Length: 335
Image 1: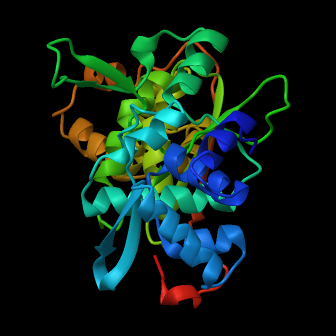
Image 2: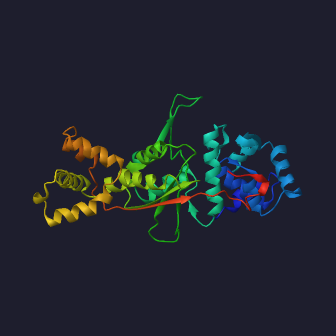
Image 3: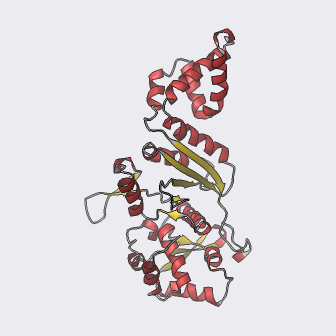
């Protein structure tokens, strides 16, 4: 991860050391929030004079405020407009106050970035627009966006990639850079936010020949379901003729369920065995039951799984996101 010298110098002008400046750049760019264990691990230090001086600088410069997470854990919010302006990131929403769920997600993002410094990140909205719109020649209408109404003007503002989950290249020097998208699962038991995220990104996914997707969570309880959802909502719809294959699978499965074995060829049985994993999951079960009961016309299935003319290659990985810390005993914190 290369941080431009001009950004480090801009933060050092406030009195921070080079190491402190590097840390604050990462916080401002990726999260807006951090906890003590993250700075201690980044600097490779324990509590002491050095860390006390850092906290004092943040307070005296009025760059950060402190609040509490559940179980009395302190969280630092880097909010000062003047600091973000120095980095050319004045419009980032990181510096605004947020709810607990948002703060926890930002801390998780910072955990990932700090633990993976060798990745090449698309850090800002401008970086992402440059890559997708200029380098890949994808129209902006395909990008996930949100429209905000301004307080000082009636003209709405369109922002892209507002979730700000890490987006990066694993091999930045490659001539054909393959982007990795990510999603960080919160503490909620439902995967509805993950489904919404995939749906928001689907128009962009359809424009890419190849990409990777990384699902991150503090626990592995959702990994199987997340993989199933990604396959059903992303992988299958991106295939060339998913509707034809799905309808053929339904027809073969219905004949099998009705014990009409004589109507099935050996090729049908092979196709059934191959397709069971491909079309596994609640979404396909729902479609099958409705289709079998004549409550779902084939036209609806075809419109839902239109496929795409581009060949697509998708890679999905689920990974446990661990707290970035020197040890689990630093300050007694566990995020």
